[in-house]
Structure formats: structure tokens, C-alpha cells
Image (cartoon, one colour):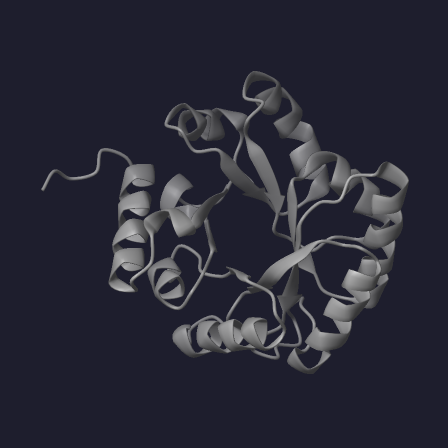
Length: 220
């Protein structure tokens, strides 16, 4: 077999292989290229290779580099994968096509009001603190049903759950747990898996994998 010519081709091939092993269609997994801290000059080659979904951590950083990139590539979609401050909710709606980090009632309230004001209802994921780590964002597992209920009441289109497992521990049990929580709560999509573990995530049901360093190299 020919070796993939680029990191993007390599990641796509590995996603497809993991999906096939799991009996899934390769097209059922969305690759979100995490471009946080990387300049437009590093992002443009991936766009040229056909990548169309990118993820950023911060509203301000995305505002600085994406308007020009999207003017040239209007079909590119942008996902917010980092923590969102409630006072930035309307700014985020103006810029992003999906938000992966809804994690608390105050943010649900802010997003609901911003969606009502703007008329723009952006798909969202509820972020779950799957490893119960004090330093990480995400709602507690026990709070997922209530947060989903409040988001639905606010007419926020919640499509799934997101998690970041603890570092240095096998990720598979955390991915399996997120998949069970999602199934128990009737949400179909799973944003899980990063550069080190996205193949495991795909085999355990990920619909979105968030890959940065494997595509771009080390962060700036």
C-alpha cells in the first residue's frame, strides 16, 4: 500500500480503518482539525487539501484569523471546542457553526438568550467532566440530565456530548462511559478522541474527533 502523502491523509485513513473495524461507515466520523494557536499560514494548506471543519479554543483568537480565511473558503465550518464565557455567547454564535463546550446552567441561559436575539440556533454539545477532575471544564455526570433539559427548554439544539478524558490513563473506559450517558439521555452524537486516542474513540462510537498536533505538529 502507498504511504499517505500528508498528515491529513494519514489521519483520514486511520479514521476510516478504525470505523471499518467497528462496523461503521468511515463517513460517519467528522474530523475536526484543531487549529488553535496556529496561524492562517499553517491552516491554509489543510484547506487546500480539502479539510473543511476546524476547531478553535478561544473566541478572540478565532475572530483574529478566521474571517479572512472564510472569505476565501466560504464552505469551511468552524467549531468552538474550548471553554466559552457567558458574556461571549453572542460573539460565539456569530462566528462558530458548532459549540462543543456547553457545561453549566449560566452558559445555557446566555446561549439561549443570544440565540433568541440573533435567530441563529447553532448545534451544541454538552461537555461532561468524565474523569471528575477539578481543574477541567464540563458538568458532572450526575448533572447531565438536568443540563440537557434546561438546554432543550431554552431551544438550544443539543446534538451530543463531549469529553476530554484524564491524561495518562487509558481513555477507552471514559469513551465507553460517555457513549452510555449519551444513549441513556437520547443524544446521538459524541465528540471525543484527540491525536493520541482518536482511533479508540472511533471504535467506541465517536461521531466527531478533535485532532490537532497530529495534523499541525506541536502548538506554537
